[in-house]
Image (cartoon, rainbow, N blue to C red):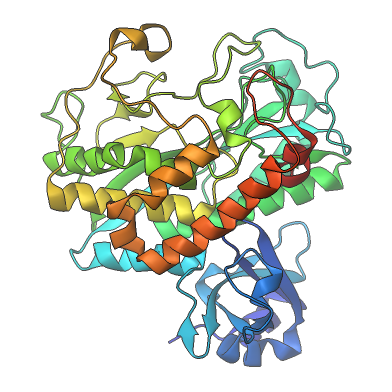
Length: 441
């Protein structure tokens, strides 16, 4: 039986609810609903005009309705009288198939048929910048190798503490916070859970970090590459497959600690890697991070080839420990739902087709990749990634052609808009278009 949100509101002294959904571009959309109206909203949803968001709709389409998921409820730690709810989109009594949360739930259902659950954790990197978005917030953060810089970390203690305390109170089990590889860049880690739970938390985390940064007079950005000379924002995902309490990826007898099922799942991701880039790296700015020029710290920490390895951060997939692997391609502009959906879709294909990933490579991919010319290169720009997606039979089968067409149509329109105003080159400065369209991703 579904939780009664009106009763919960009384218990928790919630006065308003944010009924939220994420569109195909990853933009968080909401309506602020007073508690006395939540009973009807829980049953029938909050109405939205789909054309007003990044969804493949026209002004002639009827209203769509965001029906909140009571299990996703989060009471805003910095504004307790407001409750946040993730929602599923419906139109004419049916789910909106080309909406990210619905797309993810469809892939989860495919796994569930075989009694499998994907569990993931994401590592969201972000910069703290000035409100204008022109420079990092801390003018003293100038170390040539700033990663793990204790002084720079502690200068942002009040802000980071507030975010971490919020995650503790929400039961997310955060376990570490650090200054990342770029000046002004940070990462905060919390526990893994099922893919839908992680996606909902990922959406809320970005909202929360931005809101708390603003409260402290700063601005937070997850933009993949906001500064040419600094390391970009990744969003690495750690992946494992479970049946109840049993980790289906764990084999302590294997040299990397993975089962045959895990290798097949991993093989599916490698097989579709170029097409998955359109989900993992969905912005024009994303491709300044991939195969980028060397940064001020000496490394980009992002992949350029389709490869996997052991505990080595120069590859697209790293196996840091038994029973899981890390996807290092994903960046900060990735749609939290589509990135999880893409992982599952490609992984299922790998299992069904028994795709073997080949042997791991234990080399420095940044310096030695030219010695291995047969290793596939990742797309160098969004146009290439979208072309791979449009030709992907694997993802077309998983998501249905009409759903992928909706995504491709909107991304191609975005690309056309950019090309009419700017020229993309990794050797040229970041364009104003990129900043306007990606700084608040």
